[in-house]
Every structure is written in structure tokens, then in C-alpha cells.
Image (cartoon, rainbow, N blue to C red; front, side):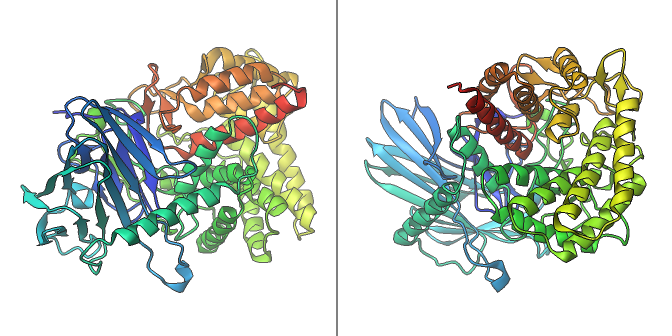
Length: 608
């Protein structure tokens, strides 16, 4: 039986570049993998309200109005409760470890919660109810002292670590949960620290926590201050950048597509996937967005991670489309049958069987990212070029194959427009890179392959009757991924073929400012929502096609679908509800790119 679930958009997110936590407007932590992005969950009531576990810290007002905000230019979350009986706040953050992983220094693994009374006398409740190992592990809890509790897995699995809770108020155990009730007067505070280190100090030092708070705030504000973006909509662009930074693994340099799993693209259906991994495609797009804002260190770290993946691939073979954040290849998909799923949307899956798919487009996104990094960041190394040239050779031999493509359909392989387009990009960028750096390369042969792909796209993926590029070879289906064609410089944004394609997509896939990926059967159950990234692609295409007025109108309408904190999920339902994993890198990186291009076009036209 379904329990109570908050809308996906009613959550904020905090993190420490190792993992994240989702916190509802009621100040309940309803999703938290610990200690890393792809570790098992500790709290997951978002996926099963009865069996998932949660960490509640909130005032016991009878009538209260919650408001949630980030402290300026940071990922520190403040949930404020307003009531005639008083005002209370809960502040949540995760300290950032600045130590170098190369020095083998174990980073901080802490989640810190602070309850505060602003006005009146406020009674708070706290319930810490973790369910270790995705709720699969049997566990025990004991009080180590009046203000300290330890949750321990009863299984012998050494990978499932104990969780420690330290508090500034007395704790009690009830039915496997740790609870507390306490009253704070105006100006009084109470701290709670959740951590995994069994050797942590037994008492909270408020001064030390205060220093951690300042250091964390300084870290986020210092990082975002390095953005070079000074255009319109700066606040939402900065927030999107802060979201993307949250998805970067400080430990490995890799980037997760989203920090969650199991959040459905269609309520009650099986479109539920695990996005806590590093897709070559998503990471490359993310780096492109961050580079546009002047951030370079993330690209450098990812290039090192990528070079290791290239060395680790089968000789003369392709890259895997996705990896674990640490580079592991085995991401076996498993169903968590003991969970009901968000609002009954089962099955809940961890791992991702798409790891075994052929998705030829990843090489285009990757080579474009490397080309731009070499141009605007640092020159790439000889060793990386050697790996890249081998990958390009593989693309030259395999570009004309059917594959599953960017949307990872599970209905079989097809000859896809987008995969051909990005194979063209891969070879084109490799040629440009070789010429720019005078790298050794069979450029003439690569030119022949690039031109062959170009001609095939224009002859076999162009539907004369529809006057549009289409999803599949000689097909009749529109696909929003075609919107990337002018953005990657395959075709001019004012080319007649492109303008007619844009009109066809506008008429067939666009609902106001919302864009569907496609409208065909894809081998999955349930009807999905509109795809937020595609909306921002459409906006950027309009801006490049000299329709900045409409682009601005649609862009500002799309901003109205962000949640109260400026966060976006993957999709939107017909009623505007957020669907899919949250927050989604794809959406935020496309927002940044659209804002950047639209702002530039408006400046050129002298519009305010």
C-alpha cells in the first residue's frame, strides 16, 4: 500500500563532492547514500515511505508555513518554519574535505544538522531511522552515551559501515529508531551530526562545527565567484553551476548524471533507472557547460579519469558508455523488490543494464569536450592523443551500425540520426585537433569518413515529404535530439533544411515551452513527460536561428518550472510536476548553454 510521498520538486539538495542528501520542505532527509554517490542508501523513504528510512528534524508547530532557501551562493540549505507560535530554522550542510586524495588522507564524512529557535519557545522532534544497505540489512542500535547512538549492521558484510549519530540533546531508542524531543528558546541551538567514523569524538564541539560551517560556506562562495558569466539570469545560471559541481566526485574527478535512482519518468510505471554513475555523454556535456562559465579544474580532473578509462578498455575496442565513479565496469542491474517505489512506481532498480548497450554518439560528445578543453583549458598530452586517435579509428570502422542511442531505448537497436550526427562530430573534432596541434593522424582517411557520414545524414535521414531530419534511417518519426545539429555546427542554424526541421519539431513535439523527446513506442511501459533538456535545446536553436525574442519568451517560461530553489528534475509531467531523477545534470547544463547563447544574441541586438 502506498504511503505518503512529497512531490519530487519539494526537495532541496546538499552535498560534499562525495555524495548528496535530499531534504524535504518538512526538513526530513528522505534520500541519502553514504558515504559516496553510489554507496547503498541510509535513508530512502522517497522510494518507500514505510521501509526506506528517514531523518526528521522539525518543530512541533500545529500551524506552520515552511520556506526553504540556500544561503547565498552556496549549497548550504536553510528550512524555516513560520507560525504564530514562533519561528524555527533547520540548517543542513555537509563539510567539504579539502585534503588531497593523493596524500591518502581520508576525507570528512559528515552530515550536520542545526535546529535553531528564532522567536518564541519552540518544541522540536528528531527521529533518526536509517535503513542500511538499501533497507536490506538487519541492524541494531545502541546508545553509547546519553547523546550518542550507533547503528550497526548485523550482517558480516564489511562494506556496510556503522552509522553514528551525535547530538547536543538526550537521545532515546524506540523500536529501532533514535528519537529526541527538546525545547529551544529564542536564540538557542541544538546540533546533530551523522557520520560513519567510529573513532569520532564522543562530544560535539560547537566551536569546531562553527568553523566547519564557515569553511563550507567559504568553499561554495569562493568556487562560484570564479564564474565568468555576467549576463542575464545570473542567479539561475549560478545555481545550475552549483548543482553541477555537487555532482562532481572530488575523489575520482568523475561526474554522476544524477545523485538518485528509482525516481520515475512515469508515475506507477517501470521507467525507473539508476543515474548515480558516470556517463561519457553526460560528463562531456557537463564539462562543456562548466567551461563556458570559466571553470577549468573540473575538466582537468575528468581528463585524468578519462585517460585511465581509455587505457583500461579492450585493445582496439570501444569505451563503455558508463562507469562507476571509480571507473569500475560492472554495474549489474538489480531490482529492490522489497520497496514499493515512489508513489508505487515499481520496480526500483540499482545498477544499470544500459552499460552493455552500444551508443555510438558518446564519441562525438567526448571529442567535442576534449577539443574545447585543448582550446580553452590546457593542451592535451601525447598519451591522451594516442588513446583518442585509436578511438577515432574505431569510430571510422563502426559508425554505420545500428545502436540504442542517446535515449537508451530497450526495444532493440536502430540506425539513428543522432548517433550518425555525433560520429560526424567525433571525426570532425579529431581532424581539427590534429591540425591545431600538428598531431600525427591519417587525416585524409578521416576526412573521407567524415564526408561519408555527412552525405548519408542528408540523403538517408532527411524526409523530403516532412521536410525534416528524422529519428531513424528512411523513417518518419521526429526526434528532439535533432536539435543538436546546429549546436554542434553540423548545419547552419539558418539553413533552409534546418529551419524546416525546426518548424516540424515545433509542430510535432512542442507543447508551449515543453518538448517531448519523441512520440513513438520505445519498448517501455508508461507514457513519459516532456524532457527539460530538450526545451533548453529548442531555446538555444531559436536564439541561433535569429528568433531571440521567442527564445527569451520560452526560456523565461521554462524558468517558471524550476522548483522553489531553482532545481530541475529530468522531466515534467503534463501538469508541471517534476519526474525522473533529481536534480538532473542534463537539464542544468542545457539551461546554462541556452542562457549563455541567448544572452549573447540579445547583446548583439542591443536588447535589454
